[in-house]
Length: 152
Image (cartoon, rainbow, N blue to C red):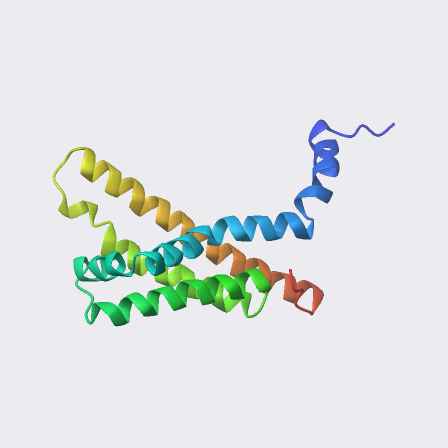
């Protein structure tokens, strides 16, 4: 008599839901959400976007603001559409790490709440970059195993 563990039974029930194309798309949408919302807010408040670029010392600020908007929206679209997904995911990972070192310089702040919040933001963004690396890894692994690239 073979006994199936609760974990195996649970996985058998969860697998169809968790591996379905809609679940995958929603997970990718959640991962890209900051790279969709951020540029839309920059478009809505372009003067604020320019102020943000100036704050981080990026000049010419209008050119950087437009570049960030186009880059984030384009990479998100490629990921969601499954077009060059691994490349787009790696681009957003590198962008996120670079922006994290620019925006969350917690090591320069005195002890206190502001430093703690910057430290949390720094490591949260590193985790986000790791998520994009996992997307690229998954797509590369999937291609290796199946010999083809799936759209979603």
